[in-house]
Image 1: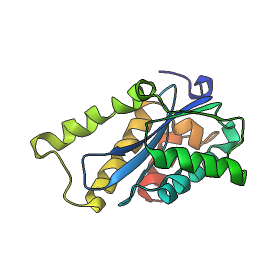
Image 2: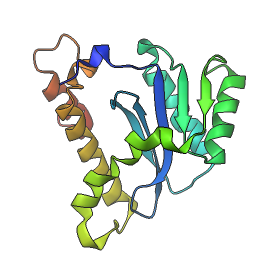
Image 3: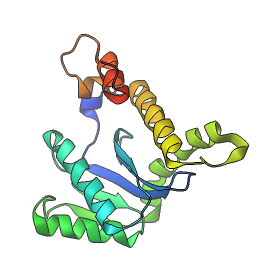
Length: 169
């Protein structure tokens, strides 16, 4: 298992995708495959992309800003990054690359979801999509050993991440 502290956090991959439900979603991961954040929304516009990217940049500010943000060719992501740079939320040194093949790691993550959905192929509503994806992301981050990033110094970091995600404590 990779040490999360040694993971390359200089390059982020963000995609505006259709997560096999009626609502498009945004996902962000590092180049090393560590999940940063995901967000489901009924709309696919600049305001949603801007809100998601600003939240992701703020919540991961302690690890530093990325050197590069790779996205798909959705125009809303390019405009959102440009607006965040002009507002000072995203540093102007961050490079934005819209190259399709650079998001292959992120695109390959849909296999887990397709395995769960099976022949039905889609969720019936956004609520079930959100709950399923939230649980999948939590379990995936535990498998990748990301619990220590969220609860450094805690005796059981995996329990901390599960209680945060599922709001049990």
